[in-house]
Image (cartoon, rainbow, N blue to C red):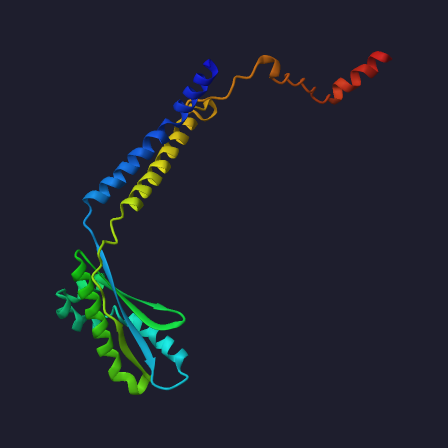
Length: 228
């Protein structure tokens, strides 16, 4: 039982930054979801119809081109008055999305209220149709409104579940970084004041023996004279 308590204490001493940071992060995410302003999104759809049989691929190409033009000033300027926004404001609230294999353009409008989001999407969709159809003799395609935007019944953001999950993940990352920093600081080998272990006298190398200087000519001749 004592070993179990000791193991639990060691785990708590090591993992307490994570155990503390994850609930705090989740609580912060929940708080953000509570106080953040809601944002609604509504979608309007426009389909590109070829005027000649067998031109389906051409219609898809023009759908992608007109989808990119949905956020340009030449389309947003006429839609600004109908949506109640300026052109610059509308460019941040509306964008177009296309499919690589379908001649359809999805116009997504956002706003702080459901009706405002739907009104922005419908205004841009109508302006895009009005901009594109005068060029039908040259392009060979015609834009037709497929579905008007419906006011959404719930906001797209904030999402309580998503915000809590993001906050918990951020807390987990923060707690893990703190835990790694503490573990590195407790390691004697990586401590800032750590120094190399002193070298014992036995481990020191023995001093090198002195090398005799080369004998001079006189010293070399003395042994020969004494031998005589």
